[in-house]
Image (cartoon, rainbow, N blue to C red; front, side, top):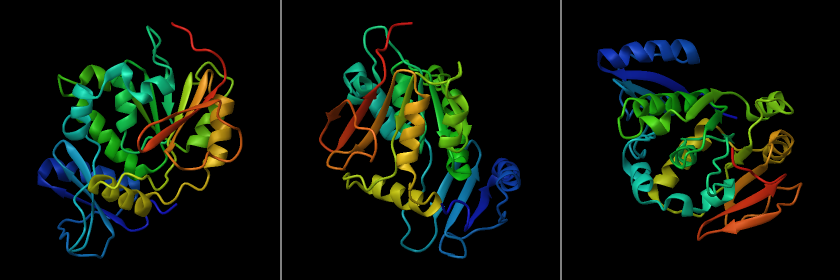
Length: 266
């Protein structure tokens, strides 16, 4: 896992400087008083500005910044027009009638799937092992909680910076175990959009590859109360180990569902 090997924190404005200073101490990253995106002394810059954080690759041909945004853009469009309970992800986690399971998204990434699940009414625990990506999620959640349109959705999202396998093992058999565990291990998804390509570049540079998907699935199956859901590219092989009970397939993605017992309302 690469994580913070070549990343610096920088800022825009006084409010950004305050956040950047605290973040550089917390993440043990260098703080730059000035920065130039063309300067490749660092592979990535974590840029703090009033109310936001974004991760930006450096270099002349680098793509634009990556950030966790639950208020605008594609996430807002999906919230308004995404199909609600008819979405495949809703069926995969077991949203039906009055059933709204408590879900642990143990590969949170930029939180888009977590936000969709929270929009559907699920309580969602987001577990992200990268301190860098966690910092982006933290900022995105703060902005969402301050926005009148999505504050109630963001209130259903909790964030934890932890290794997912270790966390799952810690809640296995306890009253804190999730009803559903949602897993989306890093894999070359077939979506060719510029946004996905940009984010995959950042994630591979910052987080590295997910080489522990099999161990993560085993930990998820031990911890979940009702089911485990694994998101995969449509034509990708299943994760080695336990076989899914059934699958839901779309144009580019597939959900492998491992049912443990039937979900019930309440």
